[in-house]
Length: 349
Ligand SMILES: CC(C)(COP(=O)(O)OP(=O)(O)OC[C@H]1O[C@@H](n2cnc3c(N)ncnc32)[C@H](O)[C@@H]1OP(=O)(O)O)[C@@H](O)C(=O)NCCC(=O)NCCS
Image 1 (cartoon, rainbow, N blue to C red):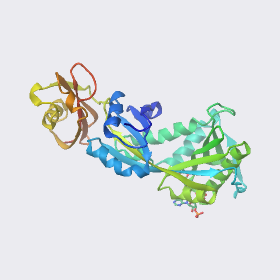
Image 2 (image 1 turned 120 degrees about the vertical axis):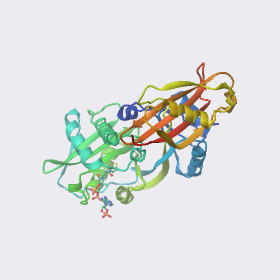
Image 3 (image 1 turned 90 degrees about the vertical axis):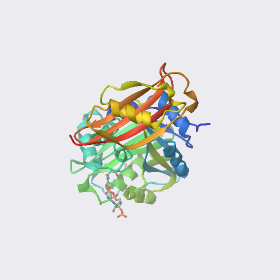
Image 4 (image 1 turned 60 degrees about the vertical axis):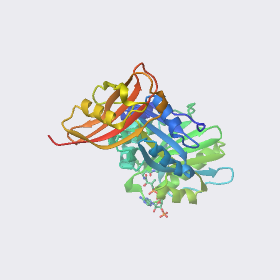
């Protein structure tokens, strides 16, 4: 039986990274059920969240052959706004300005200044383009620059000191709960309690408007913000692992090759046949297989003719690196019989 969540497409992530990205939250991990869902959506990257207490189950995904990156640990903190009275701001010279479309350029610049190099779960996945991560944060922040009363509940402020932007904050309101989504303080303004003031400001804003609970989250290694939260009425509520499964069932830098799988190989798709198919299909000179992991999800489905679809989600001749995926399916179409992921080191030519 699978956990209580399914993976669904994430158009924002997909557009940002040029791969088909899906997301899901699971209470526990079942490798076969998860690969089933990833296959049904022909996903490239599946971003999965599960309670950190389930960490021992991650090894099961890896040993089933799925290429998994443990991308971060996300911690959620809650503040009870019925009981906690936000403290007054420390910095009297901060001006908070509600953001609309006209603020997009300023918000973009602030995100660049505060989130460049930020260690998010995206940065842990070597297949995701770096500039896509920062662009993603900009898009996320801009998506909160909405007029008053927008039904999404999203809202953003730009914070100025002596007329100059020094910080931004984005929040969301859902019924009687609110969330501090993305906050940033420029390096120049850092260390003077500005972040603490952003938290106090948002607590007071939503408390005054009837919110009962405020939620915030970050990577466990972001100690600076957790220090502030602990002082400002928040307590840790939950820790979640973020996993990336690099399935790459759709993406290919070159048109995928489709080759028949010899019929006399038995029920499972032997590694040697998949490796040979990848070697034959690779358009780069002299590749050799550096690593192969394989998951056979339906070993009993081997009856009838089958084909291997070989794709290359990464094909970087200059960098000497290629990543290949060999999918075995019934020739008539249908779910995966087996799949192999291969890292190829490309010999210099
Ligand atoms: C993290 C960040 C918000 C801190 O802003 P700030 O205005 O400097 O924070 P404050 O002045 O209120 O101080 C917060 C505490 O964190 C500490 N701190 C600040 N930057 C730190 C850093 N890089 N590493 C460790 N501690 C840090 C401060 O010393 C202070 O602790 P103290 O009061 O015990 O001395 C800011 O550096 C930033 O925008 N970082 C990048 C984006 C980010 O992490 N956003 C938050 C998650 S959405």
